[in-house]
Image 1 (cartoon, rainbow, N blue to C red):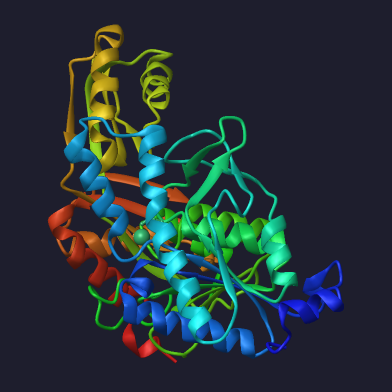
Image 2: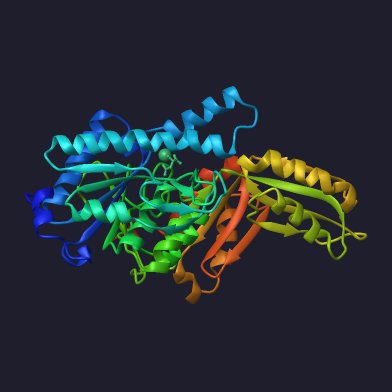
Length: 427
Ligand code: ASP
Ligand code: MG
């Protein structure tokens, strides 16, 4: 298939629905997979192999290595409040670099490739700079290039607001969202997410020596895992994959072995699929709040107005008409959460607020727990056997999360993994 030149394609125009002719694979490469020239060449070889195996290939590239972090640091060095339009202009440059280099490297291997920015690829978003949501994908140029036999490289993590015509970014890790949304829009067969780990594990293998790679995980479990702090996939991209029934294959770009398939009907062998942890949140406590209707609405209304992401919320039992309200937020939102809360404190007639970043959230996730009562009780007992104090608890039908001191996090994760996913249970 690869031998067809652009001219030959024009003599024999491609069918309107090109995807019927050839499977379409979307491959997303994360920052570590394209971190230097060697890695880019190795990604180029994989792309070319996939193309030569008879597939149409669309590649979504992340920025090289830590480029995005470095650009953010630079911005904070020249401005006290970088953000909005210019920040997105800056950050989208990262993906432009990697996509162009990748297209050149692929070209050198004798396969025609073209790179497109998010805007050129027709990825339309709302106007929320830094956290934009994809509203539509036009994709005409992507389709056109595919029809002409090219490999198409699309810059991850970015789009354009059609009203203002400004470029936008989709939030950290947003290249996953680009890849999944493009797969849906183009009618792709599979979306491969290439990373520096072998797949999704039963716990972070850096913490738990006996953690093992999962062959399959359901969308449902993966969504909860992403929300519980597993950094492997952006939660929004999993939601999208589920909505459009797109199978995701999370795998390493450093070898050819299969990774983890994320799909609807994954096999569940155990009650708990994985133990996740998250040390990126902080706990905010508002003290001495009058126990009256409307207080929580005011407090969380003020936080929502500042776009603070609130995760867990706990309100204590009231004593003498007053109570404490605690909630968790991303550490990155600490400043705006604190100022938003301080502003409503006089109105709430509360005593004060404090913010504690030394917390960790440990979670058990698994659809299997639906049919197994008592998981929560067991989890609390395992933590108590280790003398680990729980300061907040939240649950969904398939997840139990506890907030504990961050310095006990590693121990808690190991203990819970040993209890629920002991090494001998490995097949
Ligand atoms: N480069 C962006 C980030 O580091 C987007 C991505 O890698 O998915 O967040
Ligand atoms: Mg990155």
